[in-house]
Length: 426
Image (cartoon, rainbow, N blue to C red; front, side, top):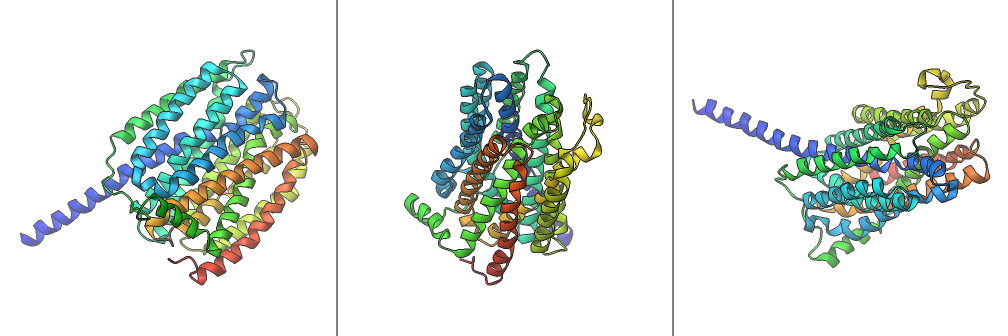
């Protein structure tokens, strides 16, 4: 009886712990999913801004900066001492801000309103991403579990991105230029629902505070930057997001201007990239249990470069004819967006390699550095591709992604050598 009672108590404790973690994990998934839709609608809004608000490619690309610079600034300012505020409270603030911003976009209906929207989304996402990345370390144990959950949550993020490419066309009616704005009522509603779910989710465990005071918290973040491995890592993160955001932001415009697809079809076609990113990241968590991360990333990057070199030129000569839906597009038209499948594992695996090796109390300041350099990479990538679209032609712009891809390939081997030497350990 004694053994049976203790066994029953043990089983109940395990189930209780799992359910607590399940609730927290589900909350993190929902928050990340909502912001995936909002953040990556920037490419769609860039296209609508050109068609509805009369701005050119370079002017429209400033929306990426309005999104990414607030992410970088807020992450830099708050990441190191966010544990003092509390991750739950920070995420609630972010969801509240973005709910109001969505409603403001509906009533504003202008390019300036779009700037305000993405600035608000940027500020909010900084709070969300630092909180989510830091919480991963609290609800997982060991490098493999960390890697798996990191890849899964980034996979869910990409599913949200893919959904955005279908949500916006669903509200876009030909002949009614303002109809697409109704999607912001749905997005405001999703943000409010996410707010309420998070509000009633209990966070039993909060992170350790990095330093003795706020000034010491900042010193911990700057101290990370003195390590060679961290420097190489943030450069790698910068290069990847430069590639990803450059392609993702401008793929709808590429489909519209080069392939001459209808606007709604151009937007939906871009979802293939996001679906590829989602599938690639979900698979990465499984594959890296058997194969070392450096070989996964090296092979994927080489395949991505081959797609740019050999497949992209064939899409430029595509004779699409009359296109009314996705089924009317020749198969080769779907080939280039598959690049998302191969670049997908890069970001979560690089993040996991570094974060899982650090003490948990440094996860928040380290995430701050990740977010800052990711945001700067996204802004530069979009601006560079926007400039290339205007000055080199939209048919040539994506070839320039081969440069950061080549640099990334070199960085993997440097990172592998540094991690093998335990350079990151505190």
